[in-house]
Length: 244
Image (cartoon, helix red, strand yellow):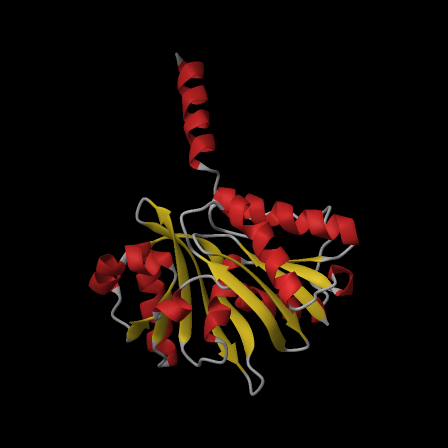
């Protein structure tokens, strides 16, 4: 099986192609350009480099959220466009599961987190179980206050005797608060493993494809978990206007 993966949920943009467990190509870029400027040229570049026939793909994996509203929309629109044109299924990979795949096979508690502002993070908690490690979702992705997350991690670590791996931009933004409240033994991911990667989305997407967890391009929608700041401001204004 061969899949194309797209990652645009955060500052890095990336794409990757995986075939039967082999990473054929990956292109990651974090620069002062929008994903709308970089994503399609990146896909075109790796397609030319590996002589990829898009008709040979079995599916498209995309980091489906949470994350940057604009980035998610660009990635999903790109996946939908290719999927509709080629009649390919979409593997809607939860962003935080894709991040957790950066530490595939680790026996630690894995806690990726994305900055959700207002002292909150989008986070999920994961571990790998079994001889052929499978991702286990200990807590599904959701927005949480950093202090509440620390309490959950402290309890999980104490009960399991495992250390905690922290990664994602939220771990960097709220490091001081984490150090105040996280009593469990823990460490922070290095730069090479700290951010979203298209290859990790590809690996998780391949697992989902084998398990039949797919959707059509027409069905695909990003998962935001929270309305955008613009929508929140508009709703507050409408509420205020209605009360005046």
